[in-house]
Length: 124
Image (cartoon, rainbow, N blue to C red; front, side, top):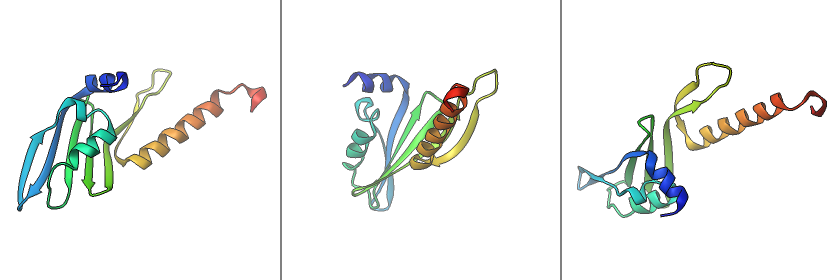
């Protein structure tokens, strides 16, 4: 396991796979080594013979969860929460139910705003 995967594993509370086989839901626990990296998780989820793909559920730091749906080559990701830490004693901003692309875009926009805001006036 890589150093980054080891750090990520510390934050994983549990990881499960759920899939329907012959119309009956099956649930199994996933190994820690397969739940810390999205690519590894997708490979692992493809091993389960779901009628319509499989779902991975990963709880992280008892704070948020990931729901990953794998169907053939297609991988979809849903983040339960996005927490944006603030400065100056303000409460963090929390929003819920975002697809990965939306969460990534929000992060990018916030980082750009912060960079522009904290840039010295003479460099703006």
